[in-house]
Length: 291
Image (cartoon, rainbow, N blue to C red; front, side, top):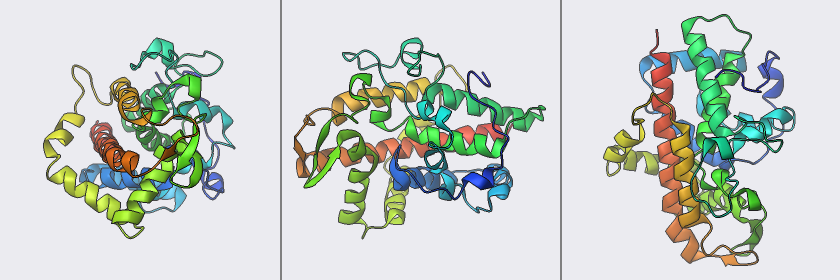
């Protein structure tokens, strides 16, 4: 799958890089964390190929642009549906591609899982020297961002509440919604409480776990049973299961989420970001190793 309803982008990337940021997905710090974790696992070849693709942007590292796909949603409205894969059955805690990978018009493949497949294929075309009109820098930035999104539990939440966006509640004393809690509020609270408001402190702590206590998990995250990397349907299924087990319970409309919710949930968010970083690295290492 290469296009599947995704417009071919040939416009100048630099014109879109300095737009006012929007907060979606994991939020800026979440996506930065995921891409920083991935960068630490790049092979030398991958690091070189990524830097080549980033040259038109003037950026020196992938993490600094990992929220780009959020920043351009208003200007590339067709891309909005690609950030999530909402589960259409409100009683289901499993992802089914044919049922759930659709946009609001019912077009198949128009979800974050389809997008990961699409942009992975485009980067393989790049490495194989296939003549196309794709903007491969954008392919890299979309893939890196969507690999993060598919691991955010509520980006694969229930369609009936728009992945928690329609569950209005309080994070401590702040009025927000459940989706935003997992995107941003919980990460910022973790940074405030443990890392002196430093996202780099969060990155370092997760990375230490990935090279230590979680090392066996990292190895398991980086393989797909019986199929080549990546396997985003698996990642989406993990996310809805995490949403059902951790995100939705105790988070009813009008409720106040405080210490009990925070201290039991932020480790889940950290694990999902770690898995996203490990899988992004493994996917790019696999792509850029071809021929």
